[in-house]
Length: 205
Image 1 (cartoon, rainbow, N blue to C red):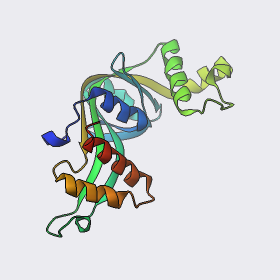
Image 2: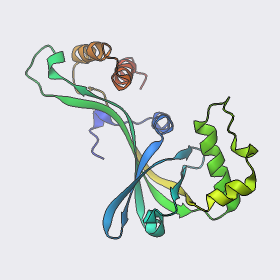
Image 3: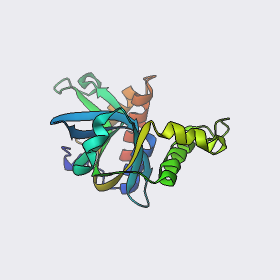
C-alpha cells in the first residue's frame, strides 16, 4: 500500500484496534490465474499473530490458497473532504480514511477442535452478551454437521501495515476547519473521521 510517512501508522496496538473494529475484511489471492477476492469476517489472535476465518466450501478459492502469499484488507471509516471547507478554493478534493493491509500464509484447519474453537470465538465476538444464541449450548453433532459446509483456515501474519489519512499534510488551522465541517454531518463515518482527526491533533494517535 502506498503510505506517505505522515500517514503511516506506527502503533501496532492502533492497527490491531482497526482490525478488531472493522473485522469484515477482503481476502485477495490468485485463483485459476486471476485475482480473486472473498468478503468475510476474520478474528484476530494478537498473541500469536494469526487471523482466523472460514470459506463456504463451494467457494473454490480455498483449493489453491496454501501455496501463495495472501493479502487481506480492512477498511475503517472514510469521508470525502471538500476544498470548499478550506480558507481558500485553491485546493483539490481528497478523501480521509483508515486502512490496514495484512500479508500472510494460509493454513487450512483440519483439527475439529481448532475449527470449533474458531467458530465459537467468532460467535462470541459478534453475538451480544445477552443473546439467546450461544454456540456452546447447541448440539455439538449439529455444529459438526454444519461445519462440513465450510473450510476453516488461519492466516499467519508475515507483514502488516496501516494508513491513517487524516489531513496531516495540511496546516493545523485547515485540519480544524475540516473537523468543524465533519462534525456538522449526521453520517457516522464523517463523525468518526472528525474524532480521529481531533485525537491526532492532540497527539493521541
